[in-house]
Image (cartoon, rainbow, N blue to C red; front, side, top):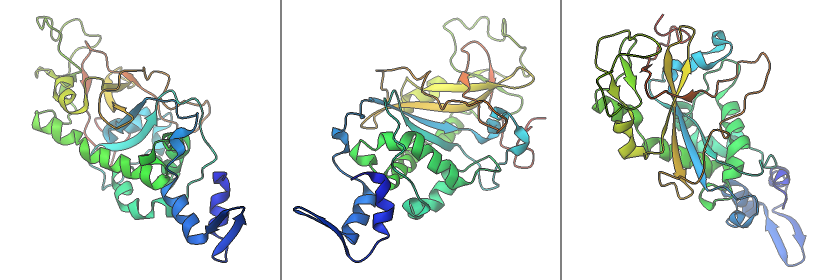
Length: 298
């Protein structure tokens, strides 16, 4: 059955909606089928992808990623890494035929509001969630464990709990700061640490290695992603964790350069796709500033 008909069919009565030769579909059965998905989607030929990117974003620098920073806001309840999305890589077809409604994720609304908020003023949380489902979740739905909006978002919430980035960094002494720089990784020779960087360090504090802290927990295929601000500083913006279809870490069958959300031209404040933080250039892990999210460090 074409999925775009399901919401209409679910709203119909009586209890038996229609009959086909040898098939009886009840309202209750159809709703359960719509809510929890089908188990045979992985047989479809569009399920060709092998890897997923679980992408987390850091609210402290999200506003700097927008073309129009004035339309950015950080809810006062947000003090941690948040979800950007779970993206199948190299999916050959994007399925726009499976709509998503607020009722699909009603039981997860509180958790999603905390863990997956929108930081753009004109975009509601549900708008953000629906956008991610349409662009990425519907393609992930060929895997039985993610074969409905509810299941897809449940998986994302569980992944966010599994990868508690803030705690991992804090335990290693890596905390948000306006002055202290960090590095993706330290080169074998550290004799030139603090030299030959594109910009001088703002602090004499030691530059800590971030990749070595995170890799044992999220796999060595992680991408630490930066944006460049108006002062040419590299700011930590996102973390991309590569997963296999069974959600184990470290899928190495593909590259993700072409799989970030595509940026469309125009005046609307769309987020920058960012870039991998350079190995030899220190980056900054800015604190969250709810009152001045556009300029957390001045």
